[in-house]
Structure formats: structure tokens, C-alpha cells
Length: 221
Image (cartoon, rainbow, N blue to C red; front, side, top):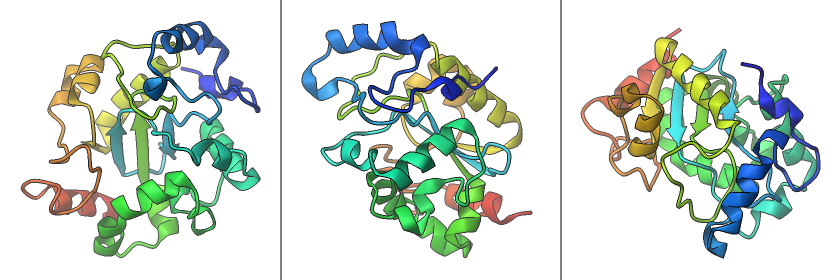
């Protein structure tokens, strides 16, 4: 499939033309706390699918009072759009870029990957080439409240991307077993975090030898 995110307009509201009707209808029925934040740039995925070794499946990107302001910052906006378009960038998994450590996205990901960075011994640049995160739904919201059925057309692209990753990558479900199982039953059987709401990729938040398997996947050539 052609990457639909090449068509995203460069200024808010950030909605793909193919998604607009469905997204507007969704927001018209939602409480303010679960409306989609269309002034923030969507994040259907973060990272480079070609170089990634570990793929993390989530639900949808969160939103807080700082998010929209941060997405107006030129450096973060450039990183987000380069990521969406698959363009070259120094840190494919851009939340690990030290120059963007101030951003809400980085502030969420950095503590949740801290133990992973320490255990692999990989620097942020190298690790950023080996991680890929895929969101079930691309648009930001404070609370999700998302049904398990597909909500918009662009999700077809990320669903196919995630299914392709099953064949060649180590895939870990961080959140939303029911949403991902509705995409493909195989996603129900992949390894997952113990507490999906915390999102920490750590020994204490994994069972058995899952953490060691993630480390091995990231460090094996």
C-alpha cells in the first residue's frame, strides 16, 4: 500500500483527507475528554520499519496541555513529518533524539525505555534504528475510548504494516489486546507487557524471559 501520510497537510487541523469525514463524525459524538486532538500531528508509527528489530504495538498517542504547543516547534514538527513520510533522519525513533528530549513524546518514551537502554548497552542513536512503535489508531486524544472496529481509512495502512512485521521482527504488544486481535487473531498470541497501562519495558513489567528476549533481538546482528 502507498503511504497515505504523504498527503497530510502541513498545518492544523491535522487530518488526512481520506479520514476527515469519519474523524469529524467521531468527534461530534464524543465527550470533550475523548475527542481527538486535531491540532497535534498524528503518530501512526515511530521508527524505521526496515532497520527495526523490535516492534511495539500500542493503542493511540496521548494528549496533554503541552502537546499542541510542542507540535508547533520547528524541530519537533520536522521530525514528526520526516517520520510520517519515511524520510532520512538521524534518529529514526525520534523520541530518543537528545535534542528533542524536552518534547512530550520523548518524556513519555525515555523513562519507559530506560531499562532497555541500560541492559542493551546501545546508545540512543543505535537503539533508535532498532525500535518501531505502531499505534492502532493514529490521532491523539486525552482518553482513548476507542471501539475495536476500524475508525478511519488510514488505519488500513498501519494494520498491514503491523501484519508484515510479524513475519520478520520481534513483535511485542504494549497495549490493547482486543483492538489488535480484531485486526488479526495472531496478535492475541504475541508476547505482551504485564501492565499495559504503565508501558514500561522492564524486567518487572514482563513475564518469564520476555525482557531478555527483547534485549537479545535488539543486540543480535
